Image 1 (tube, rainbow, N blue to C red):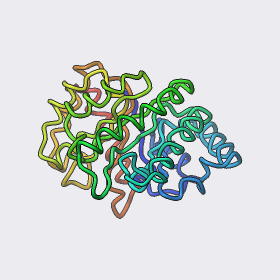
Image 2: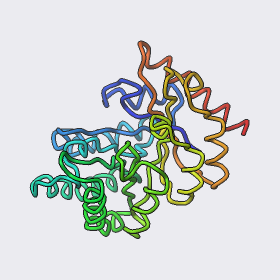
Image 3: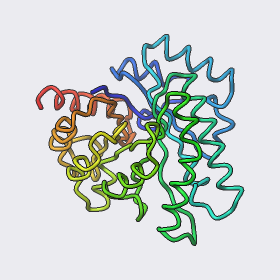
Length: 261
């Protein structure tokens, strides 16, 4: 497994992110975009050239893009403009990810006010299905993350959504920490999801550093190895008062586990 970090955990601007990540020892980074996605470097040709140059110079790859934008522009939205924007973001992001060499697009499966869980699930399946061919054509993956919505929280729920969409370009971005927040068993989720997992977030709920919180991280690593997962583990740990020191500690902890287990 390879270890990377979300930009937020390192708390560095993208101009410095790659250099700092390389010095700490990360192999890759995850770049996040929010409501202002179209104003970021990722959505601008010159910005993408700059990011690719920074990645190459540091030997730190852009492993994935986290599209926080879906907290605002959800496929579950009842307004036509919202769902159209969700579709546009997905298709544009697939082209961008292909260009910069990122395989996974983290898509938080969000809901919308006044929409039932059943209807939200239906809209998400229809929405992602409508973009899946685009992602497949670009060789990238829409990785759906469990962020606590009632229709997409458990491993079984996520598996059913991915299976119904039925595309090699749609998988799961699994976050065992989010499962802990919901008092669920991430070991069972990992077993159920098996080959559907495309990327993994790692944090330790209740702790500033890995190994200090509520999650049995060694057992999570064992569960991932049991299903032959060999992709990225991306740190989504708190930046703390000293994000560089915290990241160094977290990377050291996780690397030691991967060697021991």
